[in-house]
Image (tube, rainbow, N blue to C red; front, top):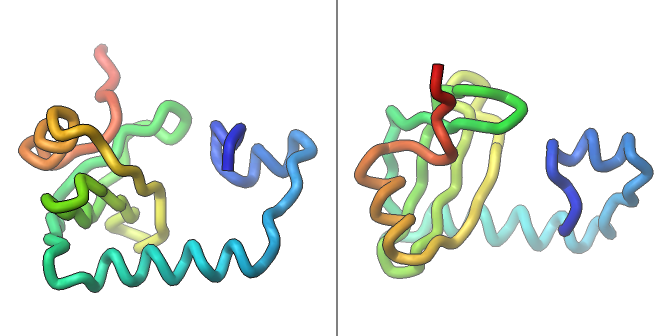
Length: 105
């Protein structure tokens, strides 16, 4: 879904429409399949840096074969985001156990 910066809730609040339930079910199945794939690895002590949410303790699922990363909130276990990265960025995020851009103080 394009134009969902700030998350799904803010997207809906700005007048965006929800996708069909079939789309949501398919996306969920793909995410579950990715996380349960035997070649997907888990980092239980990762960090997600969100532009709106700030720093969040996270669990990172990553797959070296696909370059895909999925992030879940470590405290609530809620899904945050997933994306496939070019090799350079994928390696940087996995090696550092984080996703996003840390804020500089």
